[in-house]
Image 1: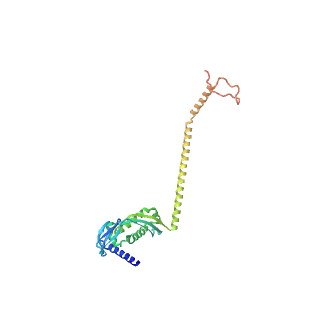
Image 2: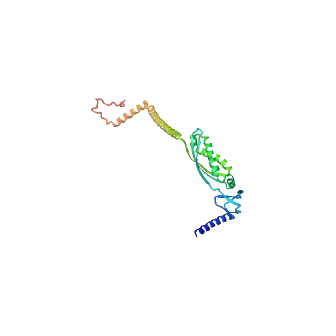
Image 3: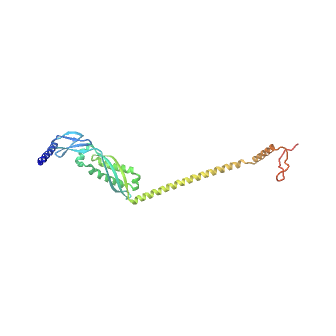
Length: 267
């Protein structure tokens, strides 16, 4: 009884496989293009998403992904000043829909392994060798653009398109990292010293300006104190003393002397 049940199951599976092989239709799902082969030979036509007719057994529909793919990786290279650099990158790319037949036929439907990986490694090494280690850091955007330019030309020949490319990180040797840190610290100390010097110079200039202003004010005052001005001040003081005098001479004076006041004499 159990043997009969197993036999029926096997027959059912075989029937499903035969029906699948004999079905005259093929489906191309979203994000793909179809390449139809007749006894293994790919046709020149690219099949869009949807349902398509095929000859059972003789023809097979192969799917080529055209949606955006993402890849990340690391590569070792040497800078122009012979510093060892490990670069980590991320790339988004896709297959041109019209190039689906080329990708299937020439790249075995494996563009990532056949083209993307070696092309990225080669481009990163070639561009890294143009710059010193410090320039790789300070000119990161320029380095990225150079790598993209090198990649775009090679990838376009195989029907591939770069959507995004990013340099995630540059890793250098421990010795170089320590040298960069020491240089950064020295530059920060230099900038602080320059700011302190500027502050001291400004404060000194302010003190000189204040002293100069005070000297000019004293000089102006000395120029204004003339003999005529002193005589005028003496007459004004005598006039004020006369206004306050009650007409009586004091009987005693400290020091035993009377104040001398110039009074006009009668003619």
